[in-house]
Length: 446
Image (cartoon, rainbow, N blue to C red; front, side, top):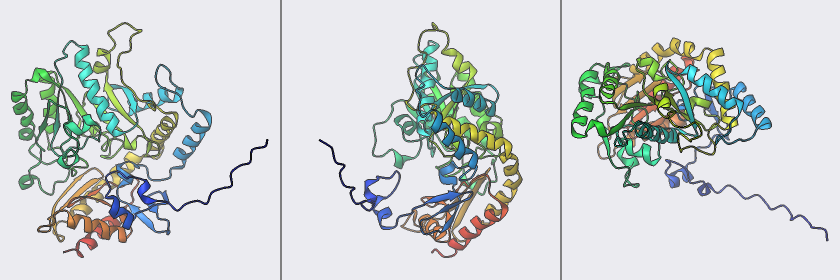
């Protein structure tokens, strides 16, 4: 009996609520959807054909600009050659090649990388490595973790525990125990309208010594900070702050973790913030710009002394019982290698350093514009704090972002803070467009 194929079913219209979106007011999105159909260079394109200047590099990640042909072709070729291989007791040449290239891109002495699939996974992995490092060295009592106010470290239970944005935690407790938090090293009275690093880092860093007087330092595994606070509002480190954190951690045998998910891959004009600020951590989490946003990927960059602490046992033993199905995925490694090729061949960092003074100067020309209370710049990052509307906190930030989008510019607002992080390939006229559009929007809101 011959089987007959079922007749094709009519295609249903997309049901927007089938996709439960992250960090999105679903009902508001359904009434006013923001959809993009394609992207190229510095722009997104809507289904209606509007070109939207991308002031956020997607989500802090498309550093080399959208649609880089070399990355597209690398992914296509990899998919046709090796669609998948596990990293559990096996691997593939591109994983080894990308790990080597990535370590060469990182600060000297960072000689190993553990691949994951996102920034959230990278942070949780770094925290686990930190605890396991002390366990391997016979100090299993070192389990406490120290984060910082306003920090964002992804959405895993570990990263959420050490993060410092309360509204992200409210519905998910209890989180990890034995976690403490440093204050944000920022005082608006003395640091407002900062261009790069403000003064005052020495006194701000002493908060760690104070905290360690409360929490026995011999019980602390790691301190984790974003070198520049990103999603929490672009707060650069005060001068001397990171250096002092490094010294305090060394004094007490505590690992220092830099969360470089946002600051990595050129955002400050150097490969990582660690190089920009001249401070080397023990572990670095990275993601976003690793593949230019083209394929999900993350990693933990590991200093040699941390890695070697795991290598003291018998050679047949598994040193770290941790990992993910898609660690070092072939397509992600291909995209990562192509991304590093673009950085080298197009001199992205050199080009960026040429426009950073213009970026900083144009941003700070908004001082005195309606509602502007503070402006902070660090590399190709910028935050603009707006004075809240009485009784309606966040309304001005949201209104400004909407007006910018109507004027074909995509920016983000976190409450009344406007956040900017465009692709590193930005040109001077695009810098002017971004800030002129924001200035015009500010003049239209009450």
